[in-house]
Amino acid sequence: MQENQPSYKNELSPETFVFTLVFFGLFTLFAVRMGTANTLNTIMNTAYRLLVDTVLYIMAVCVIMGAVSALLTEFGFVALVHRLLQYLMKPLYDLPGAAALGVVTTFLSDNPAILTLADDSGFRKYFRKYQFPALTNLGTSFGMGLIVCIYMYSLSPVMGTSLGKAVLAGFLGAVAGSIVSTRVMLIFTKKRYGTEEMMPYGEIEIPEGKRPVRSGNAANRAMSALLEGGHSGVRMGLSIIPGVLVICTLVMMLTNGPSADGTYTGAAFEGIRLLPLLAEKADFILRPLFGFSSPEAVGVPVTALGAAGASLGVAANLAAAGLIGPGDIAVFTAMCMCWSGYLSTHASMMDSLDCRELIGRAILSHTLGGLAAGAAAHWLYVLMSLL
Image (tube, rainbow, N blue to C red; front, side):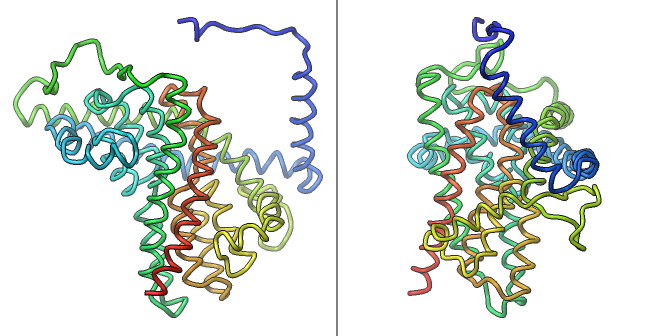
């Protein structure tokens, strides 16, 4: 209860002046390059486009996956997955077997799909409190995985070679990155929550080895589960709106450049390309670590920080220009899948899990996981090429 009590500081403190300098300095950074009017218009237009094109899509995913996850819980499929995979998930991730269902749902859809699972009491019952926040890292590691893998493989005709081996190396690299991200996150959560307390999952005590079910026959239970799960998805979809609009708008404006003709018009998704510029300065580190064929290749994982879908478009352009090879595709697959726009979703996902105080640690853990995924994919592909 005491954690929710407000704390107090002097009305004016050093952070007041530091914040003022940082806030207006950041705005000035955009305004000097884009113009004040264009900057404000781009912020509003980008937020609107994200709300219409991204948030509503994510909400639709949450509603469908919420309905499906409630159905799977109602008829014992989650319990079955837990029993079958607990001996695999525990040594790899230090998570219960039920967490594997989160891997499947996010791989087939997107990061927030795991939130609807997490909101289900039949799913939460398998987790200790320190394990629960790590679901954000685990789910994000596989977000949009199917789309990323298929899209990368579809570039085979453009590049004139089969990319199956590269995509496989990338997928395995993403698995390695997910383990690193989740395990690092658990180091922080164990310090905060300990290792014994179980997650609360309702007021009714569930007997060991039992699962709660809804009243009625099988058809009534199925319909109730679908509708209640869908309602849960709506709540989750609404809860991620602030994080997606605020964080993703900032990331997009730091990542993207001007319009196609090189001018700023105040349109959505324009920006100052600061993140790619910084990444190019670090090319002497990134090239040996990931084996990139050209400096431009770094733009793909940098774009994946904000949106995996946008990074796929960058990869296609580089492939058409002949600036990347199969080894780059392996790294792209791993990092686009593992990171999958985590800078724009992690904050809202952690907030939805009531773990707002761990947002910074979750982002740090996943940054390390994505770097590990890219390095693992690079060296796995090198090894596969030798066989």
